[in-house]
Image 1 (cartoon, rainbow, N blue to C red):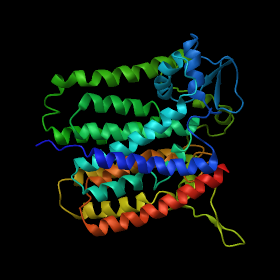
Image 2 (image 1 turned 60 degrees about the vertical axis):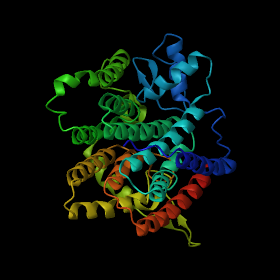
Image 3 (image 1 turned 30 degrees about the vertical axis):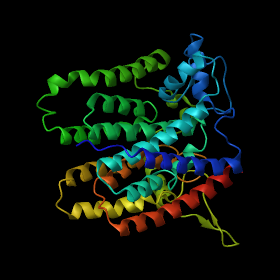
Image 4 (image 1 turned 45 degrees about the vertical axis):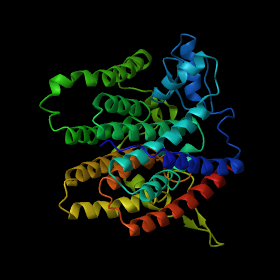
Length: 393
């Protein structure tokens, strides 16, 4: 019998997430309908509308790639794909609303993943809030600034890809994964997990690969569109433009290097410094302790240890998820910066959907789990609400 979606709980969940964001906006004034000063994706869509790949001028407050004397948006293009139809219709301030919708959709699909694993309603609700308003996701969802909306969209698209993989919707899942990669390229590392979920739910997947070739068409078209755009702009199908930012062209080791890893790995775990008055001073550049700002990592480690000690059928999935999380975090630490100005450690938000899947796939329905995760939720939500409000004000 097909399980019915719990729309009442989903509605309450959306209201809860919306209420937290609303409360924060009352302090910061960053309402989603206001004009966004860091609207790179809108500018790119406007250039496309005018028949141009490059921008008409440089924008000193944005990260603009300079190539052959022309100015380009230096980020992967998928958010502009979403905004382009709205820009065509004359809506040039739609990015805030799009970001807000993606925020709510991310919570919905996280809850639906819990439903898929038959997790108790209350625990599903707590885990979903722990993933969203109880983590550093809250900082990136607060505004639609160019650096943050891409992460927010990748977060939701990755959860959607995971959910539809669980539901054996191979073509849709892979297409959504490709969309997520067009927001955050390192999310390409989600592919082994998604393919395993599809295979695990449909044991004939490998044997009938030839009959499923149509499922790969949407993903391929999306990927080719990125490559064509990159080639047209930078003469390289794999170059989104970040390597042509002055901060990387002038850096001795470029954008990615093993030389950055030692210091950046420390930044994953460094604690805030203590002021003379006894208050913690959270770092505003290159990140702070991930367990403090996203306590869901604590929950994940505990559930992963539990899963690896057990002999259940999800051990293979647990190993794959763990491997991809470690791989993506290591790739992140090879980047020259760990996100620059921020509250928390926003680059690590890219692995949160995998962390959530790792918990949901092994989480037993026990009351003590509700209490434990609720305490982590309280900790994470309090720190991220206060930290985000303070950094903006």
